[in-house]
Amino acid sequence: MHRITNTGRVNLGHLFWLRSLAIIGQLVTIAVVQIFYGVHLPLPAMLLVIALEVIFNGLTWWRVSQQRPESNLELFGQIWVDLGALSALLFLSGGTTNPFVSLYLPSLAIAAAVLPWQLMAWLAAFAVACYAVLGFDSVPLNLDNPANLFDYYRAGMWVNFMVSVGLIAWFVARMSRALRLRDAALGDAQQRLLHDERAVALGVQAATVAHEIGTPLSTIAMLSEELRDAARTDQGLAPYSADLELLEQQMTLCTSALARLRSRASTTTNRQAVGEWLESFAEQWRLRHPHVKFERIGLPPEGVSLDDTVAVSQILTILLDNAARASRDHVTLSCKLAERGDQIVFEVCDAGPGIPAALRGSLGAMPVDSTQGGHGVGLYLAFSAAARLKGSIELADVSEIKPRGTCAVLRLPLAARKLSGVGRQGTTPSNTEKQA
Image (tube, rainbow, N blue to C red; front, side):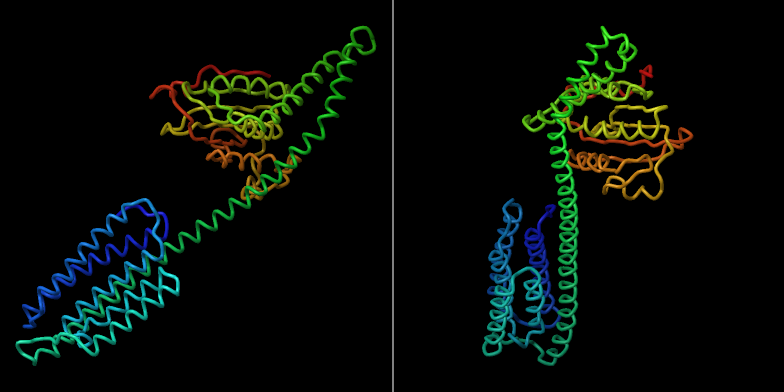
């Protein structure tokens, strides 16, 4: 049976298989009562009814293979046909004296599980009407030995009970499982929506703050430029020339960040090759933290692109900033392909004190205060951005490799590969690039 993703397709697919089992059971029952109990049934008429069921079930299978969702009226029609076929067979085999007359109940139980109560009421009324008609008129059973009637009735009731229990238990259990899965998916969707709402709210606040600091940054940039020009002629300011130059570099980074924010709002795509983008990103981050010992380990994989390098840059910037805050002695960044080749993996490691046990369950799930003075907002936004890119972030201690420290692993799905098999070469570590 096809893999099913919505409740309607689960119901219709199950109805097909239940009807198939019912057809087999009807044929077996007719053969058994004819051979072992000496019951003479109107075989042409009963086989005609079963043949019509087979044709209808074939149409149902074709309908299951379609991609369009089923309506409640369609499910109503399916169960109505089952009740009608059962009524016709019962009419030809004793009516209400037939021990299989209670097979109305499993069909009505299935209808109650999959249909609104209004349609269920119509089916219940139809079943009651058929039962009433069978009580007044039907083709009586013709037995070679009427003394076998009690044995036939007792055996039929036993089989009917087992079939009813099996059908109800199987179908209702499957339906309950589908409902539980749907409720679980709905709960996950609500959690993601709440998470996204928090991230959007923080993003709006960040954009507002970026807009507000634009003018002060321009003023500071203008004053730093004037001071640097004055330092060329004023001997008192000459010792601060290097500091003023560093200040201008930092101001340039701030204005560049604001420019990227404006570009982010107006650009629909930021796709770029990983190697080209990572080189410029690493250089920019070095300028932001000139006093941190930063290492790039290995070479990025070749022939790999990222769909949104701006978002990935923001995530890595947050991870690297946290690593630099934890330890200025040693911060590393590596980029490689996953073992299966379907993901690109960035690893940011530091030599800090590690993650406190009290914060492990909260980091990334909500803004929390850290031991280094941060408030966890950046990491929360990084986790949200990674989820939006269909990726993930994992935080783990690296005590197995180093005496202490934390390693943040960012996994993202690949955008494209230029050549199949190309890219793993870049994962082999080469000479480490270092800058103090």
